[in-house]
Length: 461
Image (cartoon, rainbow, N blue to C red; front, top):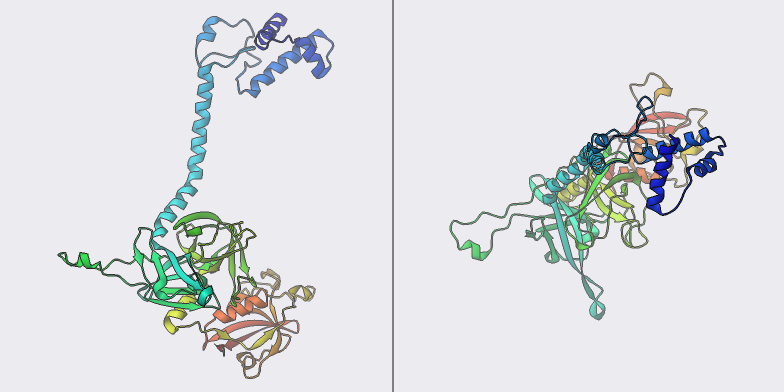
C-alpha cells in the first residue's frame, strides 16, 4: 500500500516539477506521528480529491489490488480505483449528463419565458406608437419638438379608440398627432378627448380608404382594417408580486417589451410634473418604464391590460425600477365618461377630510379597528379581517350629499362602495370615480361603533 501511494506522489512530482512528501503533508494536516496513521490520512486525502472532481471511487468492499491494463483500457466502463484519474470519455460522458439535466430544468423554467413571448406576440398589434409635434412658448422664443409615447386600442360601443396619457399629446393639435401600429400602418386621430384630473386621454380612429393611386385599380379596395382591441382585466384583483409585462416606446423605440412584478398598489399623492393629477391610485412596478412608455399597457400573463403606464420615479431620467401605472378600471371608466359625455363627471360628497388623521390613534382594546372588513360569513367578531385605515371627516358642507346621509364631524369613513378606505387620498379617489345619482353604501365609525349608511353623490360643482 505504501509503495502504491508513493508511486502516485511520484507521478505528481514528475508533472509539477516539485518534490512533495506525502508523509509531510499528512503530518501538517492532522499532526499524525505514527506511520500507519500517516498512510490512512494520505488515503483519505486521495478520496477527498476524487470526490471533489466528481470521480467515482472504489467502495470499501472492492479489492485494492493492482489495476490491470485491460481494466484501464475499457473507455467509459473502467472501475476507477485508488490512484486512477478519469479518462476523457468519462469526463465527456459526465458533461453530457449535466447538460441533459440542465436542459430538463430549463424546459420547465422556459415555460415562463414562452408565456411572455406569447403575450407579447398577441398584444403587440393592439399597442400604438404615438408621435406628437408640439410647440412650446410664443413668438421668437417658441420652440418645436416631437414627443413620443404609447397607447392601446380599446373597443368602446363598437368604436375603436386609443387610450393613452394626456401628457403624451397635450400641446399638440389633432393634425400634428400620428399613430403607428406594429406592422407599420399609420393613423391620424379623428377626435381627441382629455381629462387633466386623471391624466387620461382617448383618440378615435376610423378605417381609412386606400390612396388615390390605389383607387384607380379594379376592384375598389376596402377600407384599411382597424387594429384589434386589447382585452381588459379587473384591476381590483391584481395582487402584489404578480408578474407583469409592459409594452411601449421607450426613448422612441416602438413596441419594446419589458418584464417585472407588481411592486405595490395604492400609491397616491405623487408629484408628477408641473400639473397636479387630482385623482391618484397608482400601481407600482419594477418592469422597466422609461420616457416613451407613457400611455402604453401594463399586462398580466393572460395578455389582459391591468394598467396604463404613466410615470417613473427617477433621479437620472431613466428607469430605476420604480414605475407607476393607472389601474385599468380607473382609466377605462374615465375613457367611457369622456366618450359618452365629453368629460369626466366627478362624484361630489361634500366633506373636508382630516389629512393628519392616523388610524393608529384608535384604541385597539375597545375593538375600534378602522377599515375592518365586514364579512357576512363570519360567525364571530374576531373572525373578520382587520386592517387599519379610514378617513376622518373634519367638516360637512351644508346642502351636500354628506349632510343628506347624516355624516357628522369626527366620523371615520371605513368603507365606501364596497372598498376598504386606506386614508383621505384614497377616499377622494374613490368618490371622484364613483357614479353619481345612485345610492352608494358606506360604513362609518362613530363613538366606537360601526354604522351603515347610503349616500347619493352629485356631480362636483
